[in-house]
Image (cartoon, rainbow over all chains, first blue to last red):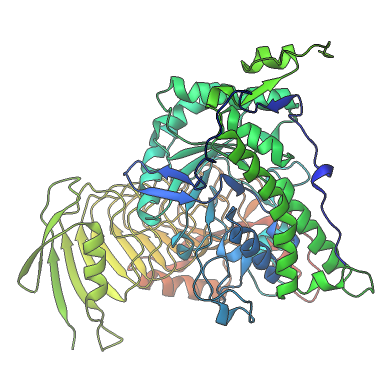
Length: 386
Length: 254
């Protein structure tokens, strides 16, 4: 028996904000159209379409066995969530990952028939460790990462497990002696920020179907953002999970970043945010505040934790045993069931918001939140706590 | 029999379309069409001799001939812009003139020979094949390499080999500052001087087998010189690991 991930257990960071329903005298009209797919326009005019404005930004693939990583990635992508992964994260050199288009025949008899399109994002790190030319085929988004990568110790580095997954070497002769490997700060083949546009144009050619995004840390946003926007990316990913933000700070940061982009004549450029731990309700509120897509790493991390624990306890007689064998239909059903509950809640809230114009979708009981976020306060006949 | 096709593109600088001639047939090819046309050229039946074509008119263009995966020899004139020949497999490219930044980024196999200077980040993240630069190369040459070999007849800039996990960089001239910074299983051979070595790398004796290997590689890359003239630069920990190779457990390098 698997352990359920309760929606209620998720930390509601934006609980001070509520969704405004339509006014009482709103005439009964039909429900808004169901197609709420996200369209991203590349600077060359091509469009990239995604089912949901949700993505898994930085999955810890090396935490679980390679087959399990691929099965999780495919199951999550099958729900319409954009998943970030390299081929080398999910399969050995000679194998084809399910996420990258492996057919059912090659996939131990799972019930999905034929070639599926699964939404996938390439993490294009400055070092490009583990990246293959074939990663570019069929990718929906290339994420040019301009923020240095920290490992769990806080060091700017990659772990031996990550390096071992990406750059398989002979047993007993691990790269760097099996130690950590320093992370790069900036792509070594780009002369400086002024030349970033050339790199993005190259990637548009290499990944002809993908939108080219730049992900960046928020620490020097007002200085860095205009420079990044000058390089004409197809979108921005803001890594807000790197700061310990309160709910109000998170919401304010999203709102301010959107405003900064608008000031730079980038009103139509997508802003994606990586907020850290959030609920389905928080995700919908962040979109209402100005984000165009939200990372749901905290939801997906629960799946990874379950599988990792199962694999560590595979020899025991605990209830984890069935999770240690990743490619069974029961297992895939479990992954989809657990995540689907969050996605369904998010999708429902997003749908309900369509009844209201964008400026009337949110309100708060807090005068401070209302003031900082420029959203209305609710006019209720009682004293609020702030 | 060695088949010979000529693709001569004569468009202007930065023009995405070029007029091309193949076997007497004149064609206008944009970059995608040129890529497709190259892959449609029959390969030589003789393993020893590659089918050879000329491509001209690409001068000044960026991202030229990326992701080729065809055993064919291509001769072309520069100068070229940034990211030429990125992520190529099998192709043997010989070009004359300077190239911009990131030449042969991510190359997997085959060869790129540049008779001119290269910009920054030459051979970044390449995992196989040979990049030979018969002039000088800018900073961060061979950054994040994972395999293959880079030969530079002249000098390289600062931070050569930064973050390289494998492969080999041969420098015929001098190197700038911080040679070999954050390098793991890669090896640098240098004939001249380095302005400074990065912390954690050191001069190491050139062993007999490396002399032989380097000598062959120099011949293959058409670089004149005796392997004995070169010094070997490796991570200190790699050198210690070599010394402890008799079944002892090697500690992590960092």
